[in-house]
Image (cartoon, rainbow, N blue to C red; front, side, top):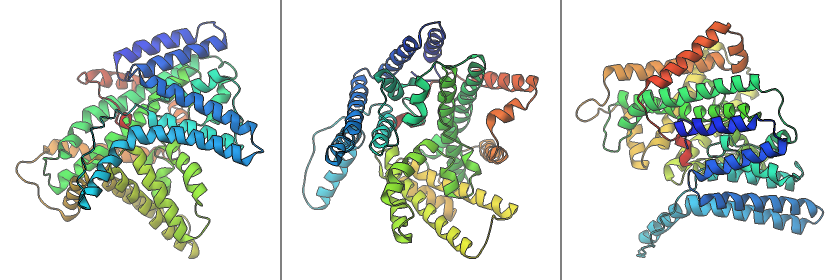
Length: 476
């Protein structure tokens, strides 16, 4: 059930109607839980059992961790159980076939002929997201940052809450569960702003990502295509806008839908193409994943506390695993490794700048850093989008060496102009909003301007050809 589908609109209208009836708060939460499980069952009913099993095991394990908090052996044993179950499910469903294929290739290189049986493993939608949520809960209880939540109903709702279940944001227990204690206050303003956010998210997804950018990116990244250097850059730029509008569009819809139901979810994007450097980029892109990796992987590994060499190791491990989190493919590993390399180089430059007493760069230098960050991120996106490493390397060679394409042009001149114009507008908008809050900026506009802008978004959404493309991050 996609946000950009009629079935979701009907489903959400029913959920919203029931949620704002004068039932008890417990009944309303139970309704939300039932709706969330129904929402997930629409993707694949058998995997509801997987979601339920993961929820119950973590609920039980966290309670036992807290009960035996003075017994390190038992405490670690119950944490190990939680991690083994969650990571075991994730490894089997998401990475089992990937590792089997690579193991077979390794044996072949060694001269051993081995043909494994066909696995045909189906990836449960959203498993990467809800697995990280439940792991964060048990780890927080283990480290004493959270107490086990008393209500199983609340915890089940936390894990399965349908607005963010299949593609985030990745919500921490401390961010969500306290909101389950008391019913939300008056809903009119929340529903109004939540509906506006959902409209904005659908505009980003349907009009910009799917209608404007996806056809261009698909043409350039077709394995059989041989674009020229300008076309390759246009394809990379188109995908950079597509993936941002697709994923940020989903997150915006999820935050808006949750707000209509009285729940606040954390921001997931904060104008990432205005980032000056990759530390800044990851403070703005997929923020709930980047903070998760920081808190549960990078810092426990030692962070930057043990010298430059170990910091480089910790950065690379974190970003390589962050890349692998996105998908079972070497292209994602290389994408993560590039970001780890960029981060390490940036840390070295900042350290040298501090040693020389240099402060914030001048405005023109800062703008150049933003542009450089975007160009490097754009180049890294080639690995994220390419079908395989061979295609990614070929496209990057074209982009850097200026090689010409073969045969007829893949993009019309108007398409080239539109891609770079939309890219420039996106970078300008992100730069303008870099330090601003969206709600405050919108509320500062006159009433008629807000209504006109919302109306234009609705017209553009309804004006494109009917299509229901899944969000890109559903595959992760």
